[in-house]
Image (tube, rainbow, N blue to C red; front, side):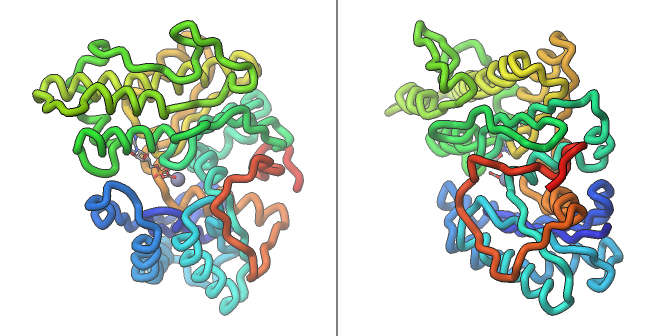
Length: 357
Ligand code: KG4
Ligand code: ZN
């Protein structure tokens, strides 16, 4: 199956062609980062205008690079939720226009599931291995921080999510406080490499530290607002020397990543997960990848780290996930709505080994 994926939920206009949910024939991304840097975050209306400018050339390039004419496509998968409504609307309108004029099946894909599928691009055979299940996915991006358990029948369960900021948001906001630019994750990753992560003890949210027991209902939930506030007070009205700044950044990153790893390992242990996968933009983080690798090696838990190019927003992951919906017969109508929200019930995840929709 040849599927065109389209992604416009935030600040990347992206299109990709993926064969059989596995081979990425093209993966084109036009990033708007520079446009939003001046504001320290994404402005939805600006993002939408930029998507409008870029969507046509990005899709055309993806089709050309893949050597796939429109009439060869078996389907179009577009991110329909969650995301910024003005931004989503552009990708969805374009996808629907193409689907209608070329008479191609259309499917709307949950961006969160797209990130999860990003782990399996170019190694989708793992999904066919009964030994891999249940799979525990940790999706960490600018918009999401969640642990999701994927059993063989695809009836996934979200075990926990963030109660306030997403992990990537915590990094982006820290970078804004420290005047490091947008997005914060990559620059924090770089600066932390030469800082001392043990110099400052930033609070770890919802892990039961400092004598504060975690309420059982929040066992797998996350909270990053406390660490952000602690940073704010740490640096308030002060000019940091360069070495101190690196230490602050390294200590802050360590606090955020520590929580992610602690929660993922606890959830894996409690659920008997047989594979852990890490995906989403924050999964690019070198400290997080190394820490998780070390912990999983000790726990003898197979770990799948999404390739960095499939961690941050891209359309290959949307095409890949969409392939499985289309293969299982789902078709969405041309009046399919977009939505800003992530549904609590993810429904049946079609790429699980025994899933039937
Ligand atoms: O998945 P993504 O591209 O978009 C969303 O769906 O949100 O993730 C973007 C997030 C941003 O918060 C960015 O700071 C973070 O991923 N990020 C990183 C790194 N690269 C991107 N965070 C930590 N370390 C990185 N190397
Ligand atoms: Zn994303």
